[in-house]
Image 1 (cartoon, rainbow, N blue to C red):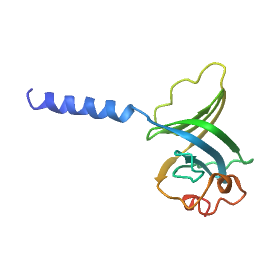
Image 2 (image 1 turned 120 degrees about the horizontal axis):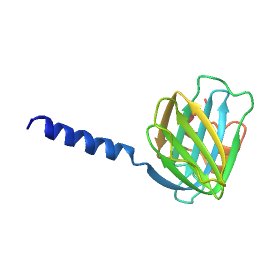
Image 3 (image 1 turned 90 degrees about the horizontal axis):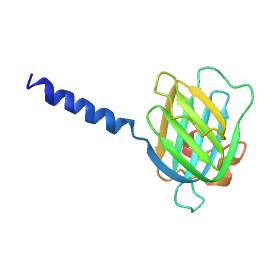
Image 4 (image 1 turned 180 degrees about the vertical axis):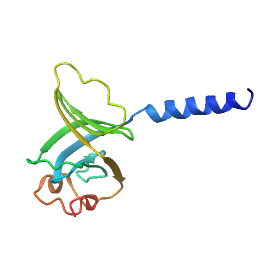
Length: 145
């Protein structure tokens, strides 16, 4: 009994820490960069340089591309989703099999994309907000390659 109690406490602490989303904010670009990849490019410090990136890989290709620019975005990140919110617009990039993000506000315009893997990058991407919106984002964390 004494050995299982610390293990149970450790699991509860790990699960609660794992469930809290990381909160970021800044200027964001959400766009498809191929028929099965969608990226979130984020400038968190206002210098127009992309310093955070998230990539959702999808098994089923999208027929039409997607692009959205958010001048003032709030971004929530967990292992299973990235949620970009600005005003009443909301974009969810979700990994199948992970818990869903919280319900969106009732008046929100929601775009939900579901994939099989979510990765993230941070640091100097060699890319800026304008480049992230172009047809070929190129250097933006090498997601465009």
